[in-house]
Length: 168
Length: 99
Image 1 (cartoon, helix red, strand yellow):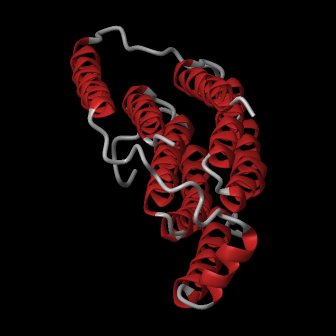
Image 2 (image 1 turned 180 degrees about the vertical axis):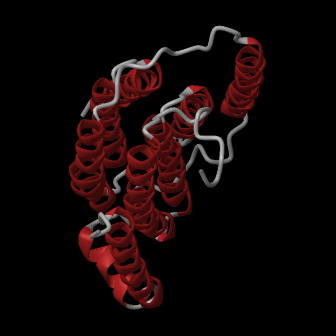
């Protein structure tokens, strides 16, 4: 199992797809790039031995949420947008600011590579299998689980109430 | 197994999502870039769950996914109604609270 190959491959695919989301002009291309990002992220989850989370990611995120996005994009029939305004002053300053933030993150992470207390992480004392997560969900985290289902119900009711056309 | 590469990748993904939220003008595309932010946080959670050896991080990811799904549902409903009423899709043109 050539682990670094998979890590670099999935990371490169994920970052390239995320750049595709941000830079794509056609909204449908942006949503499809996000699907690719989420699949690569799911691969990274499998490398971290979070199997349940990886499958949930594909089923819920790539399978339901992004399909909803695609439906809305096609419903609204959005035109390809121009990326930058004609006067790009504010945008360039903010972009440079975020570039600095990114650079500081890179530098901090690169310095931590040298002295790393997390290098000796225990080899999978608790892999994220469905059984292990299920045990935790129904014992320790039972209350958040039920509250999450109520939250989903509220979300569904809210979406129906909001998007319903008023009967004249 | 070193967990720093995962945190680095999570940071890069978060930065890309942040640039998308700031730069994009279509409201649906802003919501899309928000999804990248949430997924970057999910990656960091799972990486730290691996560090500590328990599953709390992965359960957090479970709940983050549920909340993100509910939020996207309501957010897209609002966006659809907004675009339908105002006939504009760009965030800078949607300036007034009531028209």
